Image (cartoon, rainbow, N blue to C red; front, side):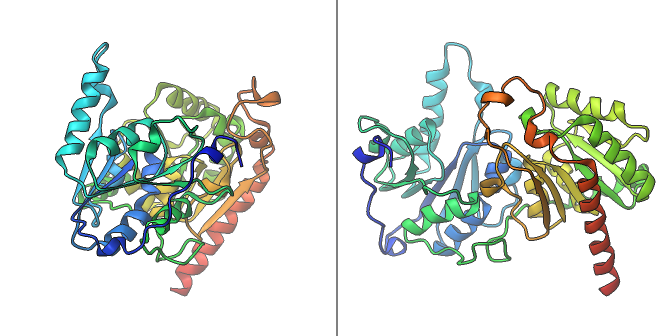
Length: 380
């Protein structure tokens, strides 16, 4: 145990929280797209514990599509960093904290540590303010932002179970399954408008059966070798007789990396280079035979939609970030460096752990999933 932890004692578990007069609940997660989708099992557990409460998710802008139409939420409150003006950040922050205060939460639950959720909890005025904590020194003001704090698990657990453990400390029941199941599934709602868009888009391009590939992450060190990815795309179209839809995020570096892959192919995939919404991406994933990609938000979207997944893992670690589904093949050679740039990986665009993944083993995984899908369709 670190010396910083030894100065801060974990709060006692809360008993009978469901018997308190809790009418309004705020759930904070100021993280990225995939992180927000991974909180949906916890949202469902909180709703089941408090069926009549008004529940608000408080998240970063650009992640809200993951919670649109979520049946367990009454509201999604978005913090938009892009509205912060130079020299006016403090005023913008206080305006947002005022919005939080206006919700008059009785209970706030912060699913990750950080400065902004601490301020939000403090300004909320909620009677019950709950959070994880990690490395806070004894003088940290964060400890006063909450009424109950609990240490991060000291062993790596999947993010879904990581969040469940905090709820359990609050006395909120969670599913007992420690593997992906119907009870602890992710939830992503694709509305009729986006489904129709996907159907029309695929019809216009003559696509019926295809594999959805999302080869690029905003963290480029997660990516596989460009040439091998291009060769895989050609092989899928030539040998397996399937189309390939390739997507990437809107950031310039992602589009450039995806374009390099396309330039290396002989048979060009149907490419959408960051110009469609997350929900449209989800609608395409839903129509695909399987999803193939690296550790990124669309991988988690595919898991939420129940699609077979082939995930190429390296530096980000599958222990806590693997696709939360039982229908998956994870190819992971292990990474001694971890996500922080260290040692031999520091000056390499392709991490050694990703370079170790061979084209043949990815082909084998694809063929295995396709055979299973074909067999299942015959059996049904």
